[in-house]
Length: 465
Image (cartoon, rainbow, N blue to C red):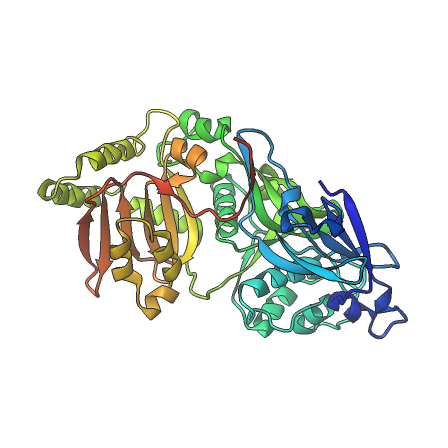
């Protein structure tokens, strides 16, 4: 893919400039390597630009890199790579005639440790900080190097070493931003624990929140950053585990069952490596997830279980819905989709419901329904300043055929991340909004066909059809 290299002397690199302070290193000795799929002089388009890396002259390690996600390829015609945690960066590229061009690429920041004050912890943290800075300039303001991270973590900026979990906590406290710290170091992993761990980390990644993970190694510990995953539509275990081996209290498929690998940044090896998903529960010690809100009081797996058990798997809710539909029958087309949906609530084998939980603000939920008939209900529920800023676990409802091959959903249940209340339920042909102090339900039937529609899915990198 990357055919041409252009070398630029002494680009402005804050990380390396900070490393050189107080030493005899020359920050101007840094070299930047640009990568292209065309000759730079041929008026290249952004699609032809593969990114860059800044190489330290003393050890040849990478002080900063931003490589296009297009270097990741799919695993086959029924697999794809999905990286929700992606951002864009514009780079100025010098040409031979002393002019320059600017090109934008999409990817995730990468930094290699220098075995001094910037180790795997600082490298992973700085990449995630740079990612969030593109989302909101007020996030982690003035944090631009490993030394800056050390200062906020409360350790000597020149200390040679990584960060402890307490120092991670101190960094986020001093930076003034919200973070979730999950400690798995003392946990004995049984079947349910593995399920919850996988579901939660997957949901944060799908919500565009990179996950910094501390993992066990042969000689101690290491820090990685999870930013995406691969997805195999034809995974046998995804269908067989609940169908052949599931217990009676398993109501639905885990959406993580179709995942083969996590896409990982590793400061030792480079960007966009594949980490086997099945190994996660065996070696993880902790997870650190910076968040856009401090209101998350329940975990994604708790939201999914709460949503389905109190609505579509609740006898009380079922009777309430039956009475309402007797009074106001569904449109003929929607009766078809409603019956199709119901088939997956009590499957005979391997074709159950697939809930997918993603973090969405009220404003984002409004955007998700902008092309749907129920957008007016969603706007009435959420279109005021406080509700638009409130965050929800949006539990999207699918079944295997539409989830795997169409990336579609047949409805959504909104669970408030702070109060754990269910504020909105949408299933084919009908939605229920809960409003007011008494949580009175308001029922709305669709006047148009309510077929499955696209679920929230930013950033598919590569898919062969």
